[in-house]
Image (cartoon, rainbow, N blue to C red):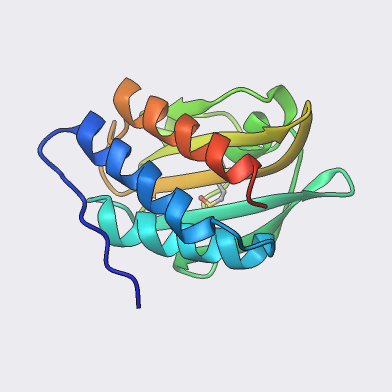
Length: 159
Ligand code: SME
């Protein structure tokens, strides 16, 4: 069992502790699926107001569902489709305040209103995307984005 002390006083402190926990959880473990599964569980347990937290893996030019917490989700997403596909195609973070206004958004869970997707890239190659969904509109801000980019860098070495 793992118990991490997460300081939720403010978002930078929260993400600093989350990064330390993600480093500790993945240290020395070469299995990427196991590492994504534990980090998805860590994010789900720690971040408030989420209805989905997890990963899509880049396999043969499309995104394939990976470890996650939340409701069952779409299994395959073409690059360029929806928020995850946009992150995969552009290799740029997508922070979407209102997914219903995002062209091509894929509604896996009708409860989702905002979404943050971070590409996980190693040596210029897309490995996966980290996807967080929230029932709140505009749930994610620049601090969430910076914190999740830092987590993505840890994961790029761990998956
Ligand atoms: N809404 C996403 C699809 C994945 S689910 O949110 C888990 C999208 O538009 O890419």
